[in-house]
Image (cartoon, helix red, strand yellow):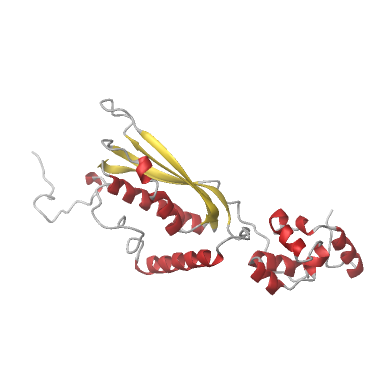
Length: 264
C-alpha cells in the first residue's frame, strides 16, 4: 500500500515519525546518524524539526532537501532516468608502436579525459580507475605483454584533474622498457549517482568545490572553442604519433605526392 503523509492527520504523522530512528531516512543512513544523535536528533520527528539551511551547512544539499521533504516541501524530483553505468571504458589501438613512457602517458591521459567526459555527462562519480597497457598479441616474434593497475579514491570523484594525477603517478608500474605498446586504456568503475552521493564527514568540501569549478571552466572553453583547444597535459597537441595511423590522415590532393595516378 501507499502511505499518504500529505492527507494524514498531523498528530498521527508526528506519532509515527517519533517511532522511526533517523538512520532509517533516505539520505541519512548509518553514515550520518551518529552525528545527528550527538546533536540530539534521534528520530524522524526530530529531523523534521531541524532547519534545512543548517543541515545544508552541517551535512549537504541532499540532507537539506530531505528535511524539506519531511516538512512537506517538494524539492526532490522523481528520477525517470536509467541507473548509472556500472563502468565506462575508453581505449584505443595506437597509430604506431609506442616505446617511450611519455607517449604512453599522453595516450593514457587522453583516453582518461574522454572517459571522464562521459562520466560527467551521465552526472556520475567514479570510485576506482583501472588503467591497462599491452603490446600486440598477434606478433609471434615478440612475447606478449599486458599489465593493469587499479587506483581507488577515498572520495568518489568526477574530476579529470584528480584522476589524471593519480593515474600518472602509477605509469612507472605500467611501462616496461623495450616493449612495443600497441594499445592502452582506462576503465572507470565503482560508479554512483552524483546527486544521491552524500560526502563523508571528513571530506574536503573546499577541494571538491574547487575541482568542480575547474571542470566547469574547462568544459566552457571546450564548448566554445572545441574539444582539442584545452586539455590536461600535451595529449591534444597535433601530430602525436600514437593518436592516428598514417593511413588515416586525409590525403592532400593539391600536391604532387597526393595527386591520383591512373594506370593504363
